[in-house]
Amino acid sequence: GFQWKPINLINIKGDKLKSLFNLLEELENDEDVQHVFSNFEASEEEIRKLL
Image (cartoon, rainbow, N blue to C red; front, side):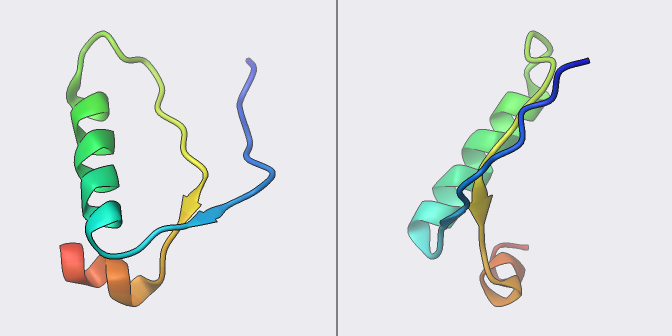
């Protein structure tokens, strides 16, 4: 099937990264949503802060 692949990645950090993770989690938990795609990148340090 068709799969969307980003050309440009957007660097996200801090509170915006936390908000984005919350949104992605909600979308993935919604039974009506079949696929979730994004075009962000974040440092390992920023991601560890959220986990």
